[in-house]
Length: 33
Image 1 (cartoon, rainbow, N blue to C red):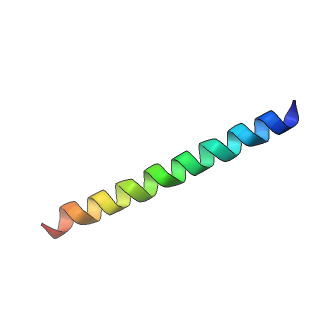
Image 2: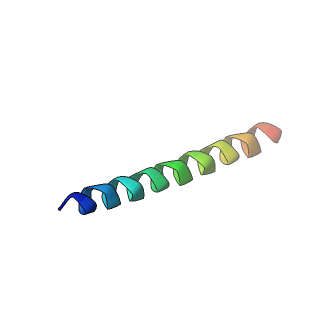
Image 3: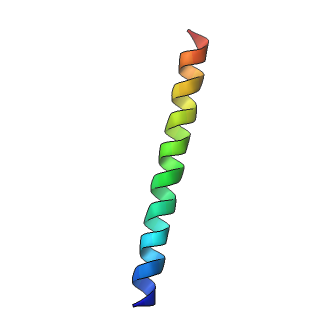
């Protein structure tokens, strides 16, 4: 049961990091134009 929690946490963290990095790149791209 516990490893499901850790797997979900890992997935949530990777999604959050991917979204955040994409957002930062998007903001940098917007700022350059």
